[in-house]
Image (cartoon, rainbow, N blue to C red):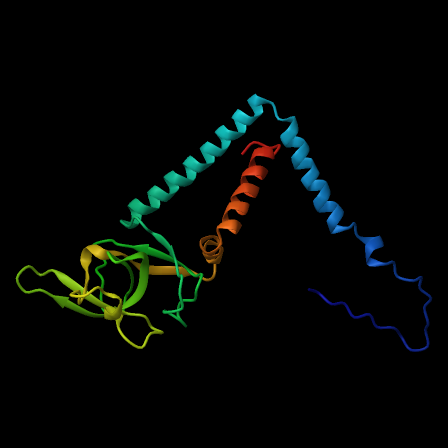
Length: 216
C-alpha cells in the first residue's frame, strides 16, 4: 500500500471541503457481490438445453486438456504421482504443511543418501515424505533397500513399519523431490479435512462455470 505525505509551506492555509464518507466514494461491496450473484442466477435460469450442452462440452474439453497435461508430466518425469502435498510437519523446517512437492523417478538419477523421497507402505494409505538416511544393497541380486527419517522426527521410520519390515523397498518409492512450491497445496488439506468445504467449493465452481456467459 502506497502512503502519500502532503507538505504545506509555512504561512499558507488551505480551506478544504469535508472529505466524503468512504461509503459515498465507493459502492458497497455487498451490493456488488449480490448483483454479481443475481446475474449468475439469471443466466442459469435463462439457459436453453442447447446452451447447457455446449457448456458441458466446454467443461469436458477443459478437463481433457488438464488430464493430458497431467499425463504428459507423468511420462516426462517417469512418475505417476509427480505432484504431492505435504500433510504433516515431520519435514519442518525445510518443508511446511501445505507445500507442494514436484517429483521425478527417472533411472538416470538414482536415489542417494540425503535425497527426499515420497514412498508408500502397504499398511499406510497416505504417502510419506522423508529423507533417505541409509541405503542397503543386497549382495546376491544388488537390490537396494532404504531407511528414511523425517527431519523433524527423533527416530527413523521403522516405528511406522509393520512387524518384520526393516526397510523401504524400491518398488514402494513414488519418486524423489526436485522442486517445491510453498503453501500452494494448503487448500487440498482443507478439502481433505472438511467434506463440507470440498463439496461447497465444487458446487460453486460448477455453478460459475455453467453460468459463465463466455465460452471456455
